Length: 162
Image 1: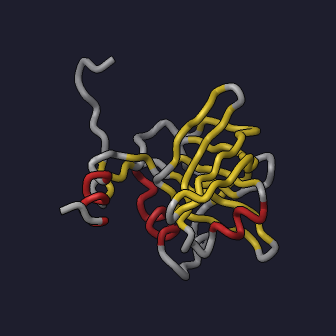
Image 2: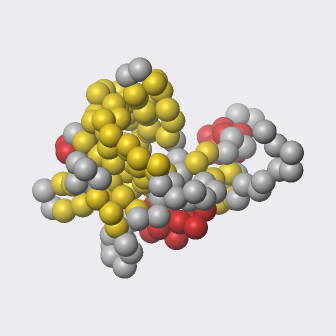
């Protein structure tokens, strides 16, 4: 039987990286964890992610028009869990850095991008966001935080891999 749960289970077999999307709003910094993130184009430099229509954070990010993406490393599972929880004090108790545009990013992320929203399209129960990266930097040299089958996973080095 084709159900929403079985659809989710099939999609859960596809491993994804995890990022934080952070922005400055009138009430201070806002942010959310996202695993539906991908590169779209090198010329111009475009990225995309999906935000749930039920998100309480996404409207503030959308209204800001610009945001940062932090690519999370496998040591940042706890920050990801915090940014996934409703009502959590997401920015407390951790070291943050600022991008040239002034967005907060984790100090130990694998990299960051400053982005400007280009287009937002309703797609089912989410909004598909396409944004242009206007600045970026590589960060820590570590393994990525990976999400697979509803939980965090780790990558392992393969011997002889190219």
